[in-house]
Length: 369
Image 1 (cartoon, one colour):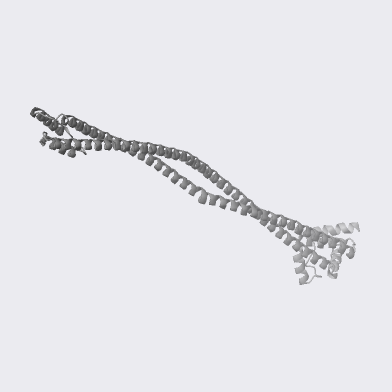
Image 2 (image 1 turned 90 degrees about the vertical axis):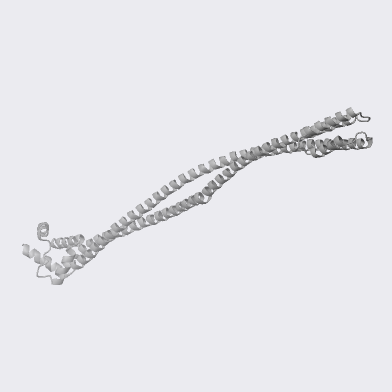
C-alpha cells in the first residue's frame, strides 16, 4: 500500500488530475477547471485522489475534508469578528473625534466672536474715550488760560476805573477847598479860584464816566457870581453830592472786583480739579487700553492654537477613515477570497463523492501499472 501511495503521489505531482480523461463529461471538465483555480479546491481534489489511491475510505475522506472546510469557516468567522471589532473601534474613534472637532469648532467660533464683537469694539471705544479725555484736557487748559487773561484784563480795567474815581474825587476835593475860601472874596481871590478851576477842568480825562458832569459843574463855578452866597452854596452842595456818588461808585467797584476775584479763584480751583479728574481718567483708560491690547494678543494666540488643534483633530479623523477604508478593502478582499475558496472546497467535496471520480482514480492506477 505504501509503495502504491508513493507511486500515486509521483503521478499527481507530475500530471495532477487529467481532466481530459474519457470518464469526464464536458460539464465535469468545466467544473474541474473552476475548482483548479482555487488553491483549496485544487488541494482537496489532489488530497482526495491521493487518499483514494492509497486505499483510503471515502467516508473518512469526507470527514477530513469537512474538518478543513470547518476550519476555513472558523477562519472566515474570525475575519468577520476582527472586522466587527475594528468597526466598533472605528465608530467609537469617529464619534470621539467628531465630538472633539465639534467642540473645538465651537471654541473657535466663540473665540472669533469674542474677538470680533467684544475686543475690537472695546478697543475702538476705549480709543475714542481716550481721545475725548485728551480733548477735554486741552479744552480745560484753554478755558483756564482764557479765564486768566480775562481776569487780568478785568483787573486792569478795574484799576483804571479806580484811578479815574480817585482823580475825580481829588479834583472835587480841590475844587471844594478853593470854593470854601470864597465866603467874602476879593476880586483877586475870585480870579485865582476861577484860574484853578479852569486848570482842574482841563486836566480831567475826557473818557472818564463822571467827567462830563464834573466839567459842567466847573463851568458853572467859573462863570458864577461868587459874590452871590446862595449860588455859591448850591455849587458846593452839588460838588459834595457828586463826591458821595463817586465814593459809593468806587466802593461798589472795589466790592465787584473782590467778588470777581473770588469767582475767578473758585473757577480756577474747579478747572484744576476737573483737570486732575481728567488726568486720572486718562491713566485708568490707558490701563484699560493696555489690558485690551494684551487680551487681543492672547485671543489671537488662542485662535491660532485652536485652529492648530482643529487641524490635528481633522488630520486624525482623516487618518482613521483612511485606515478603516484600507481595513475594509482588505476585509472585503479576504472575505471574497475565503468565499471563493469555500465555494471551491464545497464543489470539490461534492465532486469527490461522485462515482466518476472513483472511476477516474481507478483508471489512473491501471494506466500507471
